[in-house]
Image (cartoon, rainbow, N blue to C red; front, side, top):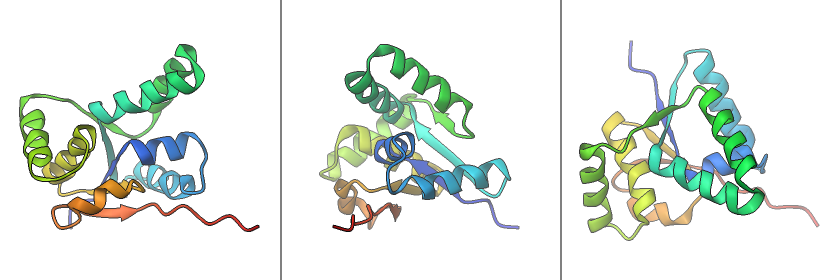
Length: 142
């Protein structure tokens, strides 16, 4: 039997899920599949930090703490920022015009032969390096 797919949630994907945005149902489906042991999911500690600072900026420290508790309760592995991950992310950043934080999501996906879930257009620059599942925002009807 083949290994289960691994979905790497970047900051965009996690914020979409937490904010119940139009792309949240797809992230929710992955999380439900993780609970059923059909796949695995993870987020880099660096991307988690991004989620938390954005959440705190938008809603205060208490909301960020609640968000952290929620994320820790999800079937999402938090990928540490150890030397190997930092060096891999630095290599990706050195060779691709993406943010340093985004390079950690790419590094996590490469290490796990995973799929980055994102809607961040910055990841278009790494499509040849890593598999991306694009979370497209739905157009709102007028």
